[in-house]
Length: 200
Image (tube, rainbow, N blue to C red; front, side, top):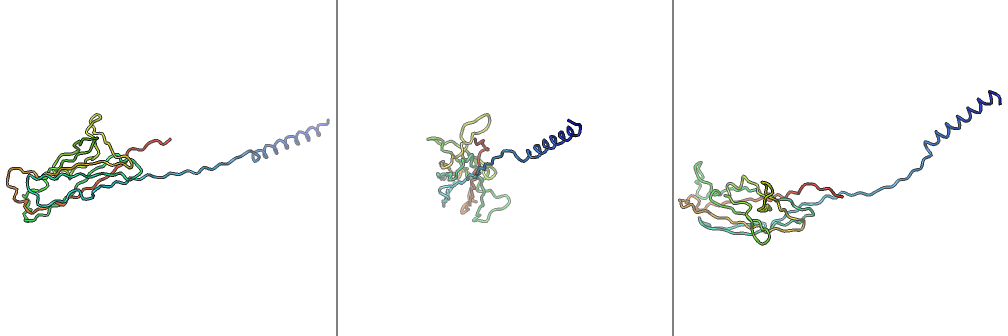
């Protein structure tokens, strides 16, 4: 075979190889599949029953008022804790609210108890005046891990009974300045979720 024919044959073979390589970049197998994915957020839905916990008139030093209410989780997520916020105003009937006047809320003792099984465990015991600067967890059990109270929370669809006792403390002194006064107490119940979990 002549040199020219050998060169021509080599060039044709190389060209065929390049064409196969070029064509190969487009002639691969392929397959496609689609998936439908959904992320649906759950809900926290806390209700208090009854909505008015206490409404009482004509109290005097030494009186106690006991009430029970229910925290209901009507959502789809577990509630990790329920924090209580307190605010109040005083209707000063005798208009004696001078700078040195006493605050009636300092004389109202509040004891809140959480129904743990068949018994009530104290959550907080303080004056209404001091309670306004606190945010206790109403579902905190009276057990500890380390130095922290364990939140019991409320599972989705669950209910927890709370007992509250108000006492107009008789301090054995003159409390006449509170005659005719009224306390308007606003309680805010804040439900919180727990930490995120791994869904497998």
